[in-house]
Each structure stands twice: as C-alpha cells, then as structure tokens.
Length: 127
Image (cartoon, rainbow, N blue to C red; front, side):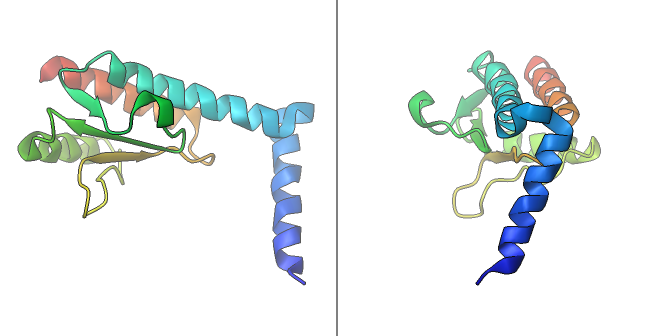
C-alpha cells in the first residue's frame, strides 16, 4: 500500500487549507488561473513579437509555450539571455521543439509571474 503517497497528499491538503482556508483546492485553482491569464494577456497583446504555440482552445495553465518573432533563433537567444540576467530561469523550450516554455506550476508564486509579465512587456517594447 502506498502509505507515503497518501501521507504526502494529506500534507499538501493541509498546506492548501492553511493558505487558502476553506476554499482549499478552489483557491489554488483561482491563483493558477490568474497567473495563466496574466501571462497569456501580455503574449496576446504583442502578436508581432510573441506567437503562442498551441491554439487558444488547448492552452495549458501549467506550461505556457511560445515563439519569438516566428521562431527567430537570435531573438529567442537574446530573450533568454536577458531573462537570465533578471534571474528569470528555466525558460528555454525543449531541445527538440525549441522556443520558450514557462513552467507555471502551483509552487510558482504570483510575484514571480508578475516579474515575468513585466519582462515580457519590456522586451516587446524594446524589440
């Protein structure tokens, strides 16, 4: 019997209740939705710079994938270098696909997403 897995699930639930009170999972879901909306809003507002890879109907809240200037390798390299300089890390897409991949997991705080949104806005204005 997977006792450790059950214990971990209980600890996660206990943590969610401590953070979000009685809304628990629904509270975490709302935060996840807010973070994804913030990211997609800035990407969609700058279509000449950012092209979201999956169609709007199948977008993920957890993994936000996009290209810069239709997959311009130099622009994507510059984007990643500037991001790293601002301590925005782990944005490089999968080696077989390329592009940019934002892992927007539940452990990522809203403040980090807001920092990335600000960077996306700045990069779009400077490009």
